[in-house]
Image (cartoon, rainbow, N blue to C red; front, side):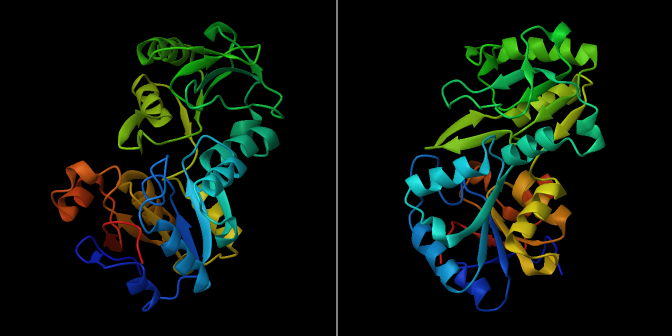
Length: 296
């Protein structure tokens, strides 16, 4: 049974949960929980090892624009042992598979020509294997695909850097034409080495304000949690718990999926954490447990 906002329990570490509850699947966010994009948080690697040692099926569940395999490679590069993880699912992976398979009526109805909003400094996203034609003119496009917030993809496969105000002009034209948008990363912002970055979810929210239709891939929507539980081999929500630092995405998503959650307070909400109770009410997202950091 999910805890009410008044019953969110402060803890010393994850050990407090493990000793009293037997969750089979642990669905972990990465940024703001395990690492800051550049290095692991203190104690995160040893905590992960302890969690794996007690038999937890650990699955990374991330609003990353990139494929799951890329996420696992990044974690390995940061010093996390891949053997601790059962697998990973990202919003980028869900997007790729949905565009590739097109077995959903919404995706089946999409055309093949897209405006591609992507990354520049953070590395462009490959559309290989999706049979898509990237176009530069809104008039030629069937839909908008947002993987990033820094550049527009070119038909050649390259990218053209573009500031946010110019990207918003493209969104205005696209919304006026009634083009649907797919957002491959619903996050509004992310923290990387204590620096905030604007993420595709911010563009998607703007697109909805303009009257555009948005297909949100990833947290807080139920599909990514179902995919993560399937990777862990769990179909009962009571056997899963999610850990994350975003009330809107991680905790709200867990609430929607009917699973319990641990709110890590030192992530993106760190600067506004006057009161957990006030903050959770503000976001209408209620964690089962509260922890200052991912620690044992």
